[in-house]
Image (cartoon, rainbow, N blue to C red; front, side, top):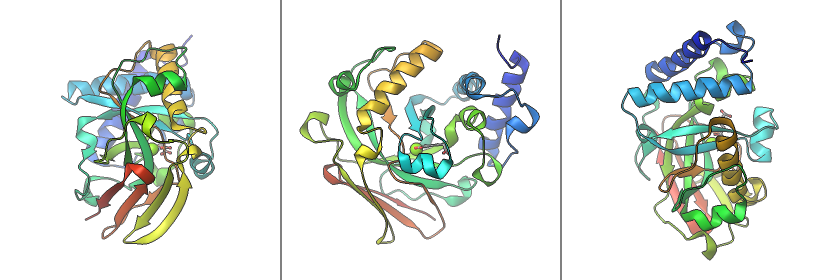
Length: 264
Ligand code: OOG
Ligand code: MG
Protein backbone atom coordinates (compact mmCIF):
# COMPACT_ATOMS: atom_id res chain seq x y z
CA UNK A 1 0.00 0.00 0.00
CA UNK A 2 1.34 3.36 -0.97
CA UNK A 3 1.17 5.99 1.75
CA UNK A 4 0.12 8.84 -0.52
CA UNK A 5 -2.72 8.91 -3.02
CA UNK A 6 -1.99 9.56 -6.70
CA UNK A 7 -3.59 12.99 -6.29
CA UNK A 8 -1.24 13.85 -3.39
CA UNK A 9 1.79 12.70 -5.41
CA UNK A 10 0.77 14.88 -8.36
CA UNK A 11 0.03 17.86 -6.15
CA UNK A 12 3.39 17.66 -4.30
CA UNK A 13 5.28 17.29 -7.62
CA UNK A 14 3.57 20.39 -9.02
CA UNK A 15 4.29 22.45 -5.88
CA UNK A 16 8.06 21.81 -5.90
CA UNK A 17 8.41 22.05 -9.70
CA UNK A 18 6.50 25.36 -9.76
CA UNK A 19 8.63 26.68 -6.88
CA UNK A 20 11.74 25.91 -8.95
CA UNK A 21 10.29 27.63 -12.03
CA UNK A 22 9.21 30.68 -10.03
CA UNK A 23 12.32 30.75 -7.76
CA UNK A 24 10.09 30.79 -4.71
CA UNK A 25 10.74 29.30 -1.26
CA UNK A 26 8.04 26.93 -0.05
CA UNK A 27 7.26 25.33 3.34
CA UNK A 28 8.28 21.68 3.67
CA UNK A 29 5.77 19.41 1.93
CA UNK A 30 5.79 17.09 4.95
CA UNK A 31 4.08 19.79 7.07
CA UNK A 32 0.86 19.31 5.08
CA UNK A 33 1.59 15.73 3.96
CA UNK A 34 3.11 13.88 6.94
CA UNK A 35 3.02 10.49 5.13
CA UNK A 36 5.67 11.76 2.71
CA UNK A 37 8.63 9.50 3.53
CA UNK A 38 11.66 8.83 1.28
CA UNK A 39 9.87 6.19 -0.82
CA UNK A 40 6.92 8.52 -1.40
CA UNK A 41 9.49 11.22 -2.18
CA UNK A 42 10.81 9.11 -5.08
CA UNK A 43 7.27 8.67 -6.45
CA UNK A 44 6.88 12.46 -6.35
CA UNK A 45 10.32 12.95 -7.94
CA UNK A 46 9.38 10.58 -10.80
CA UNK A 47 6.16 12.52 -11.37
CA UNK A 48 8.14 15.79 -11.25
CA UNK A 49 10.46 14.30 -13.91
CA UNK A 50 7.36 13.91 -16.11
CA UNK A 51 6.54 17.60 -15.61
CA UNK A 52 10.10 18.58 -16.59
CA UNK A 53 9.88 16.39 -19.69
CA UNK A 54 6.49 17.92 -20.64
CA UNK A 55 8.13 21.35 -20.37
CA UNK A 56 10.65 20.20 -23.01
CA UNK A 57 13.66 19.56 -20.77
CA UNK A 58 15.98 16.68 -21.63
CA UNK A 59 17.32 14.34 -18.95
CA UNK A 60 21.14 14.47 -19.10
CA UNK A 61 21.84 12.13 -16.17
CA UNK A 62 21.59 11.74 -12.42
CA UNK A 63 23.16 13.07 -9.23
CA UNK A 64 23.78 11.49 -5.87
CA UNK A 65 23.37 13.27 -2.56
CA UNK A 66 24.93 12.84 0.88
CA UNK A 67 27.56 10.31 -0.24
CA UNK A 68 30.38 11.87 1.81
CA UNK A 69 30.79 12.14 5.57
CA UNK A 70 31.11 15.91 5.33
CA UNK A 71 27.82 16.27 3.48
CA UNK A 72 26.13 13.81 5.83
CA UNK A 73 27.32 15.81 8.84
CA UNK A 74 26.30 19.11 7.26
CA UNK A 75 22.80 17.87 6.36
CA UNK A 76 22.31 15.64 9.43
CA UNK A 77 21.59 12.48 7.44
CA UNK A 78 23.24 9.08 7.06
CA UNK A 79 21.34 8.07 3.93
CA UNK A 80 22.42 8.85 0.37
CA UNK A 81 19.83 9.75 -2.24
CA UNK A 82 19.54 10.44 -5.97
CA UNK A 83 18.00 13.03 -8.25
CA UNK A 84 17.79 13.97 -11.94
CA UNK A 85 19.93 16.28 -14.08
CA UNK A 86 18.56 18.20 -17.10
CA UNK A 87 19.98 20.18 -19.98
CA UNK A 88 18.63 23.45 -18.51
CA UNK A 89 20.92 22.99 -15.48
CA UNK A 90 24.19 23.01 -17.47
CA UNK A 91 26.53 25.99 -17.04
CA UNK A 92 29.79 26.13 -19.03
CA UNK A 93 33.11 26.11 -17.19
CA UNK A 94 33.93 29.78 -16.47
CA UNK A 95 30.44 31.02 -17.38
CA UNK A 96 28.90 33.39 -14.82
CA UNK A 97 25.98 32.26 -12.67
CA UNK A 98 23.31 34.90 -12.17
CA UNK A 99 22.36 34.78 -8.52
CA UNK A 100 18.93 36.27 -9.28
CA UNK A 101 17.95 33.14 -11.24
CA UNK A 102 18.02 30.98 -8.07
CA UNK A 103 16.67 31.10 -4.50
CA UNK A 104 19.56 30.56 -2.04
CA UNK A 105 22.16 28.52 -3.94
CA UNK A 106 25.14 26.63 -2.50
CA UNK A 107 28.05 25.04 -4.35
CA UNK A 108 30.07 21.85 -3.85
CA UNK A 109 32.89 20.01 -5.68
CA UNK A 110 32.11 16.62 -7.22
CA UNK A 111 33.63 13.90 -9.41
CA UNK A 112 31.37 13.26 -12.42
CA UNK A 113 31.25 10.09 -14.53
CA UNK A 114 30.17 10.06 -18.19
CA UNK A 115 29.00 6.60 -19.21
CA UNK A 116 30.19 4.90 -22.41
CA UNK A 117 27.86 1.91 -21.94
CA UNK A 118 24.50 1.24 -20.28
CA UNK A 119 24.44 -0.04 -16.69
CA UNK A 120 21.46 -2.07 -15.48
CA UNK A 121 21.04 -2.89 -11.77
CA UNK A 122 20.35 -4.42 -9.35
CA UNK A 123 23.78 -6.09 -9.06
CA UNK A 124 26.17 -3.50 -10.55
CA UNK A 125 29.61 -3.30 -8.89
CA UNK A 126 32.11 -0.43 -8.76
CA UNK A 127 34.40 -2.45 -11.10
CA UNK A 128 31.61 -2.66 -13.68
CA UNK A 129 31.07 1.08 -13.35
CA UNK A 130 34.77 1.66 -14.17
CA UNK A 131 34.42 -0.55 -17.29
CA UNK A 132 31.24 1.18 -18.44
CA UNK A 133 32.66 4.71 -17.95
CA UNK A 134 33.86 6.64 -20.98
CA UNK A 135 35.51 9.37 -18.93
CA UNK A 136 35.43 11.30 -15.65
CA UNK A 137 35.61 15.07 -15.12
CA UNK A 138 35.88 17.43 -12.17
CA UNK A 139 32.73 19.46 -11.54
CA UNK A 140 30.91 21.95 -9.37
CA UNK A 141 27.31 21.38 -8.43
CA UNK A 142 25.00 24.27 -7.50
CA UNK A 143 22.21 23.08 -5.22
CA UNK A 144 19.19 25.25 -4.42
CA UNK A 145 16.60 23.71 -2.13
CA UNK A 146 13.15 25.05 -2.79
CA UNK A 147 12.41 24.81 0.96
CA UNK A 148 12.54 27.75 3.38
CA UNK A 149 16.00 28.10 4.99
CA UNK A 150 17.30 25.05 3.06
CA UNK A 151 15.69 22.82 5.76
CA UNK A 152 13.87 19.57 4.97
CA UNK A 153 13.29 15.92 5.88
CA UNK A 154 14.51 13.00 3.74
CA UNK A 155 11.12 12.75 2.03
CA UNK A 156 10.99 16.48 1.30
CA UNK A 157 14.44 16.65 -0.29
CA UNK A 158 13.88 13.57 -2.48
CA UNK A 159 10.54 15.01 -3.67
CA UNK A 160 12.39 18.25 -4.52
CA UNK A 161 14.84 16.47 -6.88
CA UNK A 162 17.40 16.62 -4.05
CA UNK A 163 17.87 20.39 -4.51
CA UNK A 164 19.20 20.03 -8.09
CA UNK A 165 19.71 23.40 -9.79
CA UNK A 166 22.87 23.84 -11.93
CA UNK A 167 26.07 21.97 -12.79
CA UNK A 168 29.43 22.94 -14.25
CA UNK A 169 31.54 20.19 -15.81
CA UNK A 170 35.31 20.44 -16.11
CA UNK A 171 36.87 20.57 -19.55
CA UNK A 172 39.59 17.95 -19.05
CA UNK A 173 38.06 14.48 -19.57
CA UNK A 174 40.19 11.62 -18.17
CA UNK A 175 39.89 7.86 -18.70
CA UNK A 176 39.04 6.42 -15.26
CA UNK A 177 41.73 3.72 -15.39
CA UNK A 178 44.50 6.29 -15.97
CA UNK A 179 44.21 7.81 -12.49
CA UNK A 180 43.56 6.75 -8.89
CA UNK A 181 40.06 8.13 -8.42
CA UNK A 182 40.03 7.55 -4.66
CA UNK A 183 43.21 9.55 -4.05
CA UNK A 184 42.40 12.68 -6.07
CA UNK A 185 43.17 15.72 -3.93
CA UNK A 186 40.49 18.41 -3.93
CA UNK A 187 40.79 22.13 -3.15
CA UNK A 188 37.88 24.58 -3.15
CA UNK A 189 38.60 28.31 -3.29
CA UNK A 190 36.61 31.53 -3.37
CA UNK A 191 38.38 34.46 -5.05
CA UNK A 192 41.68 32.68 -4.49
CA UNK A 193 41.10 32.03 -0.78
CA UNK A 194 41.09 28.38 0.33
CA UNK A 195 37.75 27.11 1.68
CA UNK A 196 38.33 23.35 1.94
CA UNK A 197 40.69 20.48 1.23
CA UNK A 198 39.63 16.88 0.74
CA UNK A 199 40.22 13.70 -1.25
CA UNK A 200 37.73 12.03 -3.59
CA UNK A 201 37.66 8.92 -1.35
CA UNK A 202 35.38 11.01 0.89
CA UNK A 203 32.68 9.72 -1.48
CA UNK A 204 31.91 6.19 -0.20
CA UNK A 205 35.63 5.31 -0.23
CA UNK A 206 35.66 5.54 -4.05
CA UNK A 207 33.28 7.59 -6.21
CA UNK A 208 32.56 4.64 -8.55
CA UNK A 209 30.69 3.07 -5.61
CA UNK A 210 28.21 5.94 -5.73
CA UNK A 211 27.47 5.20 -9.40
CA UNK A 212 26.98 1.50 -8.61
CA UNK A 213 24.62 2.39 -5.78
CA UNK A 214 22.65 4.65 -8.12
CA UNK A 215 22.41 1.97 -10.85
CA UNK A 216 21.13 -0.54 -8.30
CA UNK A 217 18.64 1.74 -6.56
CA UNK A 218 17.30 3.19 -9.82
CA UNK A 219 16.67 -0.35 -11.07
CA UNK A 220 15.11 -1.70 -7.86
CA UNK A 221 12.95 1.33 -7.26
CA UNK A 222 11.97 2.55 -10.73
CA UNK A 223 13.05 -0.25 -13.12
CA UNK A 224 15.30 2.21 -14.98
CA UNK A 225 18.81 1.60 -16.40
CA UNK A 226 21.63 4.14 -16.64
CA UNK A 227 22.32 4.88 -20.31
CA UNK A 228 25.48 5.48 -22.36
CA UNK A 229 26.12 9.23 -22.59
CA UNK A 230 24.49 10.05 -19.27
CA UNK A 231 26.44 12.07 -16.72
CA UNK A 232 26.46 10.92 -13.11
CA UNK A 233 27.48 13.39 -10.40
CA UNK A 234 28.69 11.34 -7.44
CA UNK A 235 27.96 13.81 -4.61
CA UNK A 236 29.62 16.68 -2.77
CA UNK A 237 33.13 15.75 -1.59
CA UNK A 238 33.25 18.64 0.89
CA UNK A 239 30.43 20.50 2.62
CA UNK A 240 28.55 22.96 0.38
CA UNK A 241 29.20 26.73 0.46
CA UNK A 242 26.56 29.46 0.21
CA UNK A 243 27.00 31.62 -2.90
CA UNK A 244 27.00 35.42 -2.95
CA UNK A 245 27.38 38.02 -5.70
CA UNK A 246 31.06 38.67 -6.43
CA UNK A 247 32.16 35.15 -5.51
CA UNK A 248 34.43 33.30 -7.90
CA UNK A 249 34.39 29.66 -6.84
CA UNK A 250 37.02 27.31 -8.21
CA UNK A 251 37.77 23.69 -7.52
CA UNK A 252 40.95 21.89 -8.49
CA UNK A 253 40.62 18.11 -8.44
CA UNK A 254 44.18 16.84 -9.04
CA UNK A 255 44.55 15.39 -12.59
CA UNK A 256 40.96 16.35 -13.43
CA UNK A 257 41.98 20.00 -13.47
CA UNK A 258 40.08 23.14 -12.54
CA UNK A 259 36.46 24.20 -12.70
CA UNK A 260 35.43 27.81 -12.22
CA UNK A 261 32.12 29.51 -11.40
CA UNK A 262 31.94 33.31 -11.16
CA UNK A 263 28.76 34.62 -9.49
CA UNK A 264 27.12 37.86 -10.62
C1 OOG B 1 20.50 17.63 -1.22
C2 OOG B 1 21.51 17.58 -2.33
C3 OOG B 1 22.75 16.86 -1.89
C4 OOG B 1 25.11 16.26 -2.52
O1 OOG B 1 26.01 16.25 -3.36
O2 OOG B 1 25.25 15.79 -1.38
C5 OOG B 1 23.81 16.84 -2.92
C6 OOG B 1 20.85 18.68 -0.23
O3 OOG B 1 21.58 18.37 0.72
O4 OOG B 1 20.41 19.83 -0.41
O5 OOG B 1 23.69 17.29 -4.03
MG1 MG C 1 25.67 17.50 -5.01
